[in-house]
Amino acid sequence: MDIYFCGPAVISPEGGVSYRAKVDYRTIFCRISLDALKRVSTDNDLTDPMAQFQASKATLLAIAEQKIKAGQIKDNLVWITMQDFSKKED
Image 1: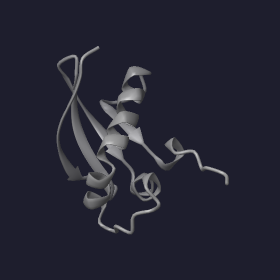
Image 2: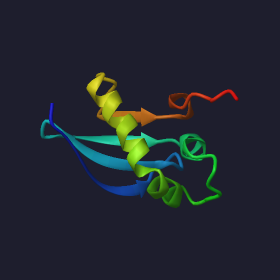
Image 3: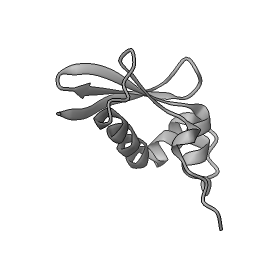
């Protein structure tokens, strides 16, 4: 399976960020919910969704890649939500 993240990052209709990928020459979209953007890095104080995406881009696209490989694509979309981040108990 060939996966290529080609972007660009854009604000999605739900308020999160959408990022385009090619999977075996098929275009899909990775949608990162606003809640996921807030949860991915709780130690940054960024409030702009695009800035949050850019600050955690590698982590978010790694999650998207795992979901693509697991076949979690529906209607050409891969969703990354806050449920994709386990809460660490101290």
